[in-house]
Length: 457
Image (tube, rainbow, N blue to C red; front, side, top):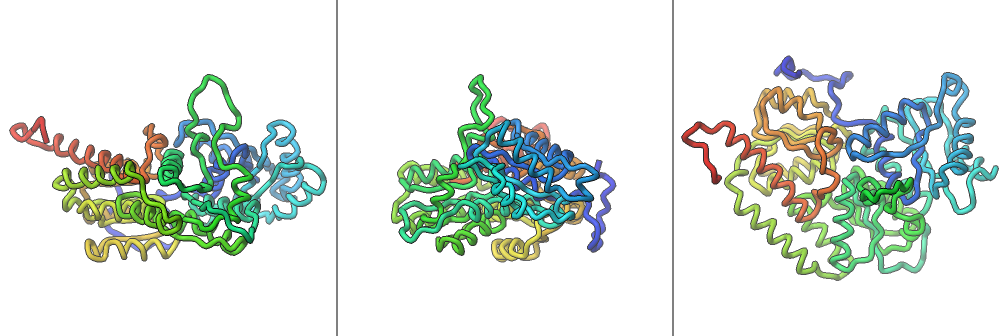
């Protein structure tokens, strides 16, 4: 369906074709699901909420609950304050959440609804039960991306809940970024292996990958608790994974509660995971367990054994900025050559970090933030690649250019299992390597002449 994409590249400043991102409320909704007993609430029209829920449901293959202010034509003219008050009253009476996390939409932002004042008035009027909370963040979709929305909601968790403390505890905070539930679970496993007490927030493990037990729980057992979020202000340090999704919350915590932070890349691949381990060692003085060291050794062995299949392969990568940065570094560590790297999320740090990683490998690589998939397709036409990595929307380019394709990042709408298998940590790197190697060898089999078609490769 993209066979007519022209190879010539022209500068565009006022047109996006096939965006490499989606809108802020989706990220805010996903982050809110990482609070225990939280019902996300979309302050806008029913259509916006339906789209955001369905997008997340298609990715995670789980029902995603959320409420809406259900705007009408009249609301668009006179404001959504009355709708939000009625919604807060109904939500606490019917669904009884501990937290309602409100995010705005384009319409409510354009109207200019003052959510801070509306929520404070609702509390004063007794619409919010004692011990329950309504938090909010602003997520206009005409700026940023779903990663921005995730970042904004995570920062709001700090602004609403974190309590400053003069006496710091031995625990640390870990902000894992916009990653899968399985990634958050694996990060907690690594912390547990090292004997590190930590608050991981948000935490969607056991929320969007909850086991089937035969009975429905409206609020699954997972998610960070309100009490844990309050305690983040008494932690001795924060590790923020990914500048785009996590740094804003870490900065807010430093300003509000004087908790310093380490900013690291998402621990995808061996080098980024090493830096995560080193950060934990520096903060806590603890050493990685034998099991973690064995996992690292197995990853190194796997990289060594299969280096001949990766060497010199040209790769195009697109997706969320924090994911793409770490994946690019991982590809370089496997002797592959990323030559087209793109994200739909704006931000200068993306291009700077990618250039740092590629300076000795592919200094002329095409790198762009706030780009679109139309341009990425044109890059591939101009300089073909051996492998394409990105979310489901890349399948059209892969089909048009007959390129092996590995699904990676968000959203993945046409495959299952991605939310159950981590890509972070040493084990996650092994999983990613197996996926990459699989498509490369499938292509080698498909293209082999009859006399070169081997059973053992």
